[in-house]
Image (cartoon, rainbow, N blue to C red):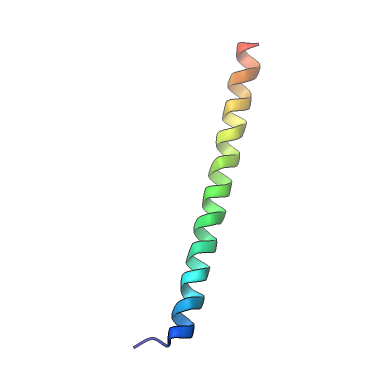
Amino acid sequence: MVDSREKQEWRLEKECGNLETIRRGSDAFKSKIGAIKLKSE
């Protein structure tokens, strides 16, 4: 049985990791859109 506090910290760590991944993904997405916009101009 995992201590509830440990569980919370683990969950937070997991969520932060997911947020970081999402942020990185959206940055890549934005740069992709930026490249497409430049081409279309």
